Length: 66
Image (tube, helix red, strand yellow):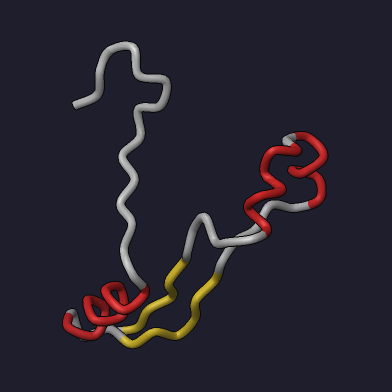
């Protein structure tokens, strides 16, 4: 668990793209679309620190079909 005074209480699981695609394939899914959401201009104006999220995908959305 996290120390009680930990600033962030989030566990980050970093995986390679290969590990995601192998797991998707093994489970019998077909990838239809991969989306990497980025912050909008409105979000960047409100939260300028998110500009770093334009350099890499902080999230990935997989659209799969079985």
